[in-house]
Length: 512
Image (cartoon, rainbow, N blue to C red; front, top):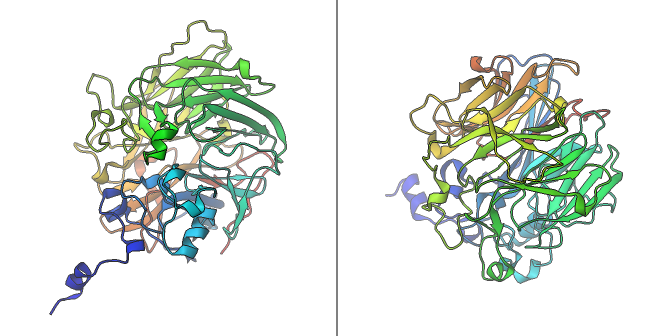
């Protein structure tokens, strides 16, 4: 007689939920496929009394088995977490963003949209639908949440209920079909700086730049052309400039997309490229393009202007393809050397500074190392965005560990002084994956970096997730509080802490 384990092994899952037996869909990365509310979560330790607000986080979570086994994890449906913290208590809520894709596939009880950003692989009945999964980032703007995915306009959501309000185009003022997952908000005036790439359709080298005031009124719009067509995942802004970042993940030609290829492929012959454009009164001819070697840029730390009139951009730099799942054209991404460290004496990655002179005649740029840590997902005290700053927080690999953590994800949080390069860190251990942090200032007028870090930890040893709160001034001490969740979440991407983070804006709490 077969026991339950043997019976489960013998019985196959229904096809629509029979996920591929590849790392993106198995073990700790298996889809969660639920919505949930937990009132008064179990709290270990004591949540500091200054913390009063909501931590929102976005994660890609597949509702249905993909149409193609080689699809990438960043094509999962967007699920938004809200952790409301007040008076030392924490409540949790999670809901899927009701995108067109989510609603159509739920009605069909199966996947009908194809590969990531390749509409030619869709079921023919949905080829004209909006593809967004709204799964990359969640921000607060104009009294609502915006769930972001760079292939489409944002989806607006209610900050309290997490109900989806629909696609948001700034009242008809935003005409581009795409919208970055990483717009910037000026902490001094609440302006939103944003852009969309491939802005005239797939594989076009058009970028649409927009600037909106804190009430959502369009102030600027400028369309420019890029040197080649590729991923532009993040951007940066100073008080007077915008920086575009073109990664050598080249968009594939339409004829290859029509044959079912992935949207991007690592191009070893393309340089990491930066464009600077005036933030106000820009014209297409004003853009200046700078280039470096073939290298990877994931996310922006901060940008500011120096006394010399130059634009400075700080960010992690990686010397191989960090998005390894988009390998070179025709190559196996699991084995190709482009995804491996080069072992040429340089660190695998480090936090660096780029300098752009608007009056330059030589457009080659070189990075200057600020912090020698192998990490990504940089976060600053957002009150210092677009301005000179001193502290950076990073997700890193434990510098003292002999091996990378299980699954290769980051397991350590670091705080660093960018002026001295000195850092402090806390490791969660080899069986835990840590997510990007959000910074919580102790008060609106607290010194830079005086506050707390909040993040989600996925514990693979117990197959559960929890929320961590650390003192940003004493990261080495580890969490001051841990908020337990009675289930596992998938590794997420980006999130935001909402209190009085932006000038003149206060988010309502996401009460249950």
